[in-house]
Image (cartoon, rainbow, N blue to C red; front, side, top):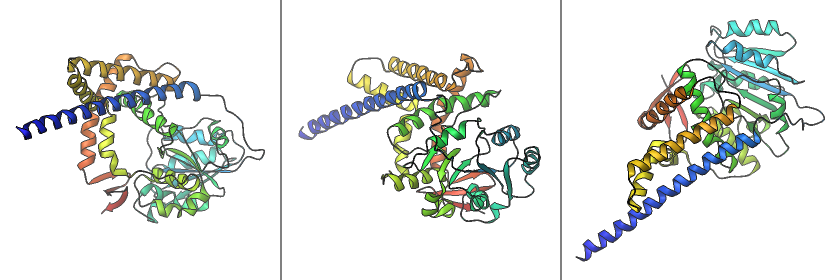
Amino acid sequence: MYWTYFDNEYFAYLGSALAYLALGIEAIMLAFHVTGILFAKLFMYRKPTNELQEELPGISILKPLVGADPNLQDNLETFFNIAYPKYELLICVHEEKDPAVKIVEPLMERYPHVDARLFLGGNNMKIGGNPKLNNLLPGYQAAKYDFVLISDSGIRTGKDDLSEMVSKMKPNVGMVHGLPFVTERKGFAAILDKVYFGGAHARMYITMNVVGIICVSGMSNLIRKSILDDAGGLQEFAKYISEDYYMGIACARRWTMVRVATVPSTIIAEPMTECFVLGLFVSWAISYLTSWDPIVCFMVHVIQWFILDYLQLKALQREPLNFSKVDYTLAWMYRECLTPFFFLEGLFSRTVRWRTGTFKLHWGGYLEEVR
């Protein structure tokens, strides 16, 4: 009888603790939603501040290219039209026969006033397993300026974007990074991209950076080259698959000496940030603590999440969306339903196909090429 009483009492406390934990996570994610929406409304899309130094610093823009997708020429051409007085454009293509070369060379001829150079064959240098950094090495070594902008091939820029990023580079700042978003394109894949980058990704990206947690995407980052050199240069980061994250860590260590949690912790935390997984947990918690119907609780949770994601997407987009609410609903449901399966696939998969090779991932973000 004693052990039966103990077990019942113990599991009652455990159940209550788990239920309150679920409600606590739900409250945190609601705060993430609200923070993302308010930040986009209040602080983004402001007019350029023009709070620049009297003498503008030179910028070395590094563009790693592999292959030639249909948008490459339009994206790349925006970097030849930047309204900034002193910059160089260092375009790195991993091999001479890459089709991107046929797009780059005509652009360089069309804009002879732009200080642009083309580097070929960087991928053969093999400073580490990361093919992007292997590709970038010749351009990085030739960079003339301390401010380096690493910008992926899929990025397009406005004329004033570089000036605005430089204006944020105060003496105590080591990196300025841009929130990834998606331009107007047609097709369901484009809608799915916009729903993800304007919803789930932006929510976490904005809020984590607002509260001081390092969250850096490698698509467009302005970095002090001296910091990277002090940390070991590109060679130090080429052993990682997520070099952008570790570059952010290096900058944070230089300025704030912040300790960063290890990557494996995301195995537990990340699923709890997904709508359906958290919804199941919260629905059980509410039904455990009260007499409410868990199905109704789950539906309320999903509808709330659906609306808040839409509001955040609208806050980031500003102008009207180029797709209907039905398209948004289909893309949102598709993404939310399949994400848990993609997470499990990534958790148990040992290799990943990236750019021109296949790689094995190890704990800590280390990368090993599989030949």
